[in-house]
Amino acid sequence: AQSVSQHNHHVILSEAASLELGCNYSYGGTVNLFWYVQYPGQHLQLLLKYFSGDPLVKGIKGFEAEFIKSKFSFNLRKPSVQWSDTAEYFCAVNPNTDKLIFGTGTRLQVFP
Amino acid sequence: DTAVSQTPKYLVTQMGNDKSIKCEQNLGHDTMYWYKQDSKKFLKIMFSYNNKELIINETVPNRFSPKSPDKAHLNLHINSLELGDSAVYFCASSQFTDRNYGYTFGSGTRLTVV
Image (tube, rainbow over all chains, first blue to last red; front, side, top):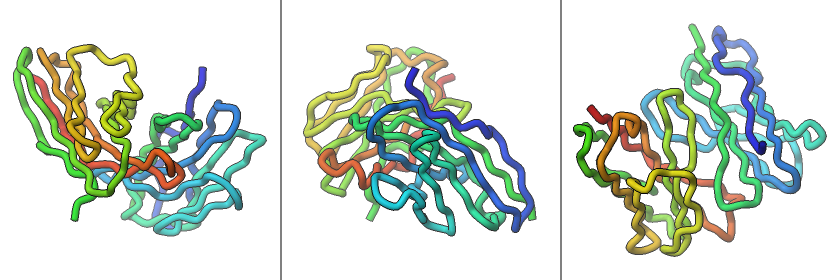
């Protein structure tokens, strides 16, 4: 079945540690890819998106993601996390239809 | 100015009641959506409207009825509420011809059915 997988369900890091959250999708053809962040009690905010061009995408707050077509992956990275990055992170795919398909989310906890 | 606004933010109601959630966007987008986020944080699309026409209707009980009076508004009416309807409901909008831009989400409505 077509899906979006986020294998890391819960990640715990100390401040200044590096972060990589995995995202894999199973749709063929052209896809648009997104990472959203949801801070506690808040709505979803767009971190970054990829639709074409340079597969290394830079987003807000120092986040970046790399689209690797051969691996159907779009992993999110940050070289040095902060306590304020504690949130739920969602990978999402728009497989050229009119809806956004979300992964199950990764809960990130950063301790000072 | 809030781009996508939902009301109410919180809604606590008893089983069997009928309730509505309203959503308005001032971005000039032509497509609006309702997503449901369950207790495990999983987000799933429920409905999508493009220029007031229903274009996506996922497997949602017919107790849920979306209504779009114009392309800036998409309301969600729920009849005969059940405990399992407790969730956070997010409204979102996008521009159909430019989905690359992404989707803008509202702040959510936390529905609790008791």
